Picture 1: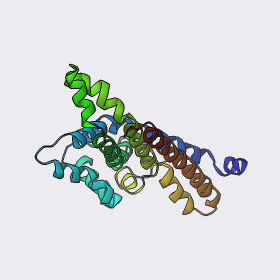
Picture 2 (picture 1 turned 90 degrees about the vertical axis):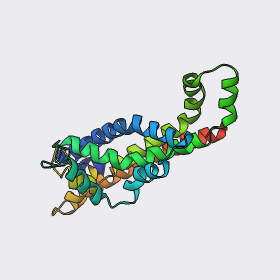
Picture 3 (picture 1 turned 45 degrees about the vertical axis):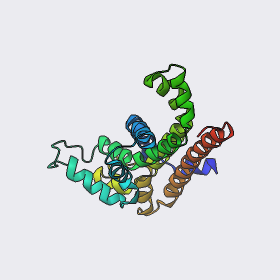
Length: 227
């Protein structure tokens, strides 16, 4: 099977695989800090507008990805509202994947933060630990498995992103053609069934191992009694 995939994937398909990996890694890095910060904020703090912020963050999960792509195009297109032209560039592919992946990162971190026992933080405060010390030495280590799981899920989601990416970034070979768009292109090309199948197997394998890694983190945390 491996040999068959090697034969089925030509230079263009390997190029799409490389682009997809680069885009997914960059998108995951882009959402890491805001995703962790927002997850901890929603999981540990009560403030006015929390419900609205939570709904806004998770909106990409329920919107059709094409709609997300159109909104990004309206904001970052040539005549976009923000005056920054990112459309149909590698940056557009990264941004589209990041927007789609962000809710998964936030949700995982928020869940982990909500399950942290308040008594542990109170005990640290009694022992003289200040807010920053409690954050670094207590809260962050206890939410670390959720953070790792969220980033892994975000990476897997970025890897499979299609609708928002093709709408906002296009399907430019060597620039914005990721695994899903390459599979679509190959499936629509006469004689491209072998390439489409090879890319599909590669996509399934990468996503499967990413999900396995995420599940491993969560099981490991539960075995230790962490969130």
